[in-house]
Length: 222
Length: 300
Image 1 (cartoon, rainbow over the protein chains, first blue to last red):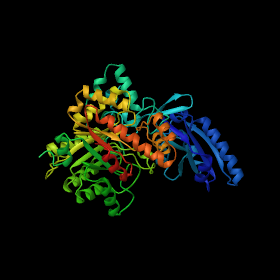
Image 2: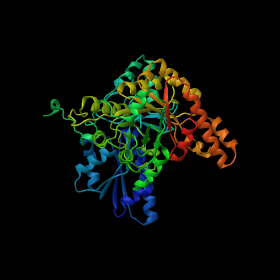
Image 3: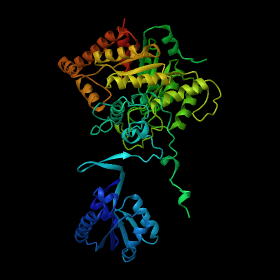
Image 4: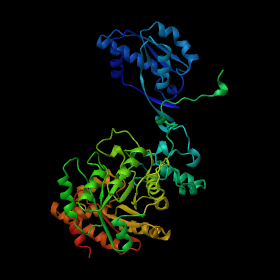
């Protein structure tokens, strides 16, 4: 899923200052699961903004709404009337959701209420961790299902750096070294020979290096 | 002509090799570099010029050129942290044109461990891919995209290794890959745990890696227990055993600790020198170039 974090209330007040009628718009998909921008967080953030508004004499009028998916036009339609009757939208969707709303309502300011962080999973209660960098050319088949691009801070494709420790990464000592995990995994599944191959430089063009990415499926075009 | 490197000739001669390092400063003053070089003396086979190890300083390419002009042999260090493959190959061509004949290929300290932790992460290629790229440029005369290189590029290719990285199997697998990719010499991280180093070199010998590359063991004079603790805590690629830190602590005042640090370094060199498969040492003086002549004088 896409994992995001809430911006702080002071940050949100700075963003919204000067506006009156505000729609706080949640999203029922990834950001609901990672407890950043679902119905519950819409309610909490709205309450906090009302309190801040009273404290700072800002006269915010806040409406709350959560739709199933902000990145999908079919669901955005459900927010149409609420968007129209407010001055601005504070989207608690991911970066894609915020931009989908902004693209749909050209006359309306749409602000991001979250910092979209990464594609990851819930590792344990209260801890989400990045697993995929969306590089556009997956190499997981070669590395025992552990991504060296995401899990190694240097994106090393041919083995660990000299700062690798068996229990941690030099760059993030609170995390394991991705290459130690790859080594253990490949050894465990009898594929250690894969590490002996010299992997050539990666083609980063399918990643962000190639500009904004678009997938065109001709078989789905009308 | 594969190589036009003095260091290559020294390695081929079978002499015990001593290399040292120069850490450029955030400075445009060439005399500063020349002064540092003057301490290193003639017994040094080559001098590494570090590539922004802790944040921006004078470039290793420019520093290497100052050495060439001073009649010394630079080992031009290049890290993959800050430059993509376009910039790296461009700098390598520049190095070739300027008479730089040794290249050391590293991934480099991650930018979050430098004074500029906000910097963007480049790491377009990794250190092994860099070794292979330099070899391709030299031996096939072409860039990574196949473009033909005009002129010669007769460089000796080096890489680094950390003997303390565990497990040993993964460590040696990676060392073997570096040598297979084209590393003709290996400079190691500073050795403090001599027994761990011995286990490492034994494995490298068993796998015949030492026959195909020249291993230069890194040695570092510590200036005191606080210096040692800072290094140990800040850089996980440096393993400094507690026994060494205790020994420095017990030495006494600042001056005594510094002397003890040098003693430890000299003891390490004496032990390492006897080991089969070690072709020399690389003195990691960490900017304290003045100590190098003292270390060299005590070698015989």
